[in-house]
Image 1 (cartoon, rainbow, N blue to C red):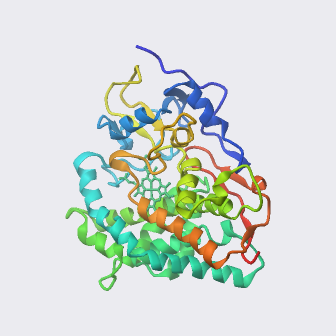
Image 2 (cartoon, helix red, strand yellow):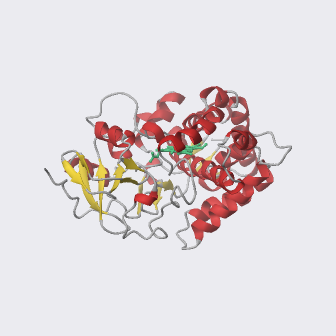
Image 3 (cartoon, helix red, strand yellow):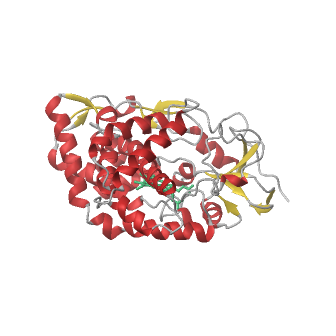
Length: 388
Ligand code: HEM
């Protein structure tokens, strides 16, 4: 039996700020170390990171590896480890497993299917057009990270869920609070988003929130339903916000730069942006429910395991085929169709309605910052002119 190699001298969970075009050395270092690499977990003790595509897909599908924080190492303090409550305390798509997870997926899936999301295409393009036109009318130069990338996915989500848009600022504040790093922030932000989700559940509401209410398992309480809606809003905003920054930066990059993505078709631009800059660079935490063997290493029960999504997606030896930007297996991103449509809509509207739009700064001067942990990075600013 082997021991997985350790990654020493590099902290994969450190906060960073670097140029958007600068490769992230952590993922190359992890990949070079082996298919399964032992690191120090931010919450204490060892953790294992999977850097190999086939092994990652095994881990994503393995019923002995659970996302339920009930299996987290006993030494982890759930308040500082950034974990959700256990599935028993607060059932959610991200923490339930097995048949309970399948039942909840079954309730959500038709609402976010390719057909249902496709029917929203005109509406989502119209939201992108309206928000960008308003920004273009007001100013010659605009920072799209401040004025657009948060508001656009939130507007789309609230609109789809049937939550009145006068809650938009409240929702944006809660999403920002969630990432503020303040000790009480997560609880307050979850309460705020769960509370405003209730605005989509009134008797006369006709959005996806009301439809979900009618589809969730019968034992679901109102508080649990509101948490499911919080999860959709938060998971859908955070990731798409970051992805939009990178996508727009590459779409508008002025003049020659070392990146071929700029001249690509909209679909290719979206696919390549997500492959190379996945907004979730790591999967969420998973934990072994029993002792298991992984890549020849014996892991104890309660071992924390992560998949290095960005490292696998950018592996030069990677075979063609689907990447891991949206995960894989039973927890594959339920909002993938919506996210892809949102990104395509923005790239298309920029090309058709703002053909002269460009970055104010060279691409290489755009900085992306990560607060560390499992969080992906987000551009610190995206100054553009929409009129050329
Ligand atoms: C570019 C945008 C997005 C990316 C890159 C992304 C990525 C991911 C990934 C990697 C996972 C799996 C995590 C794991 O298994 O550890 C996931 C799950 C999930 N995503 Fe997304 N996501 C995006 C947008 C969205 C949107 C728009 C929504 C909501 C409408 C959403 C809702 C969810 C939910 C609820 C889960 C949990 C699914 C489950 O565990 O069954 N995501 N996402």
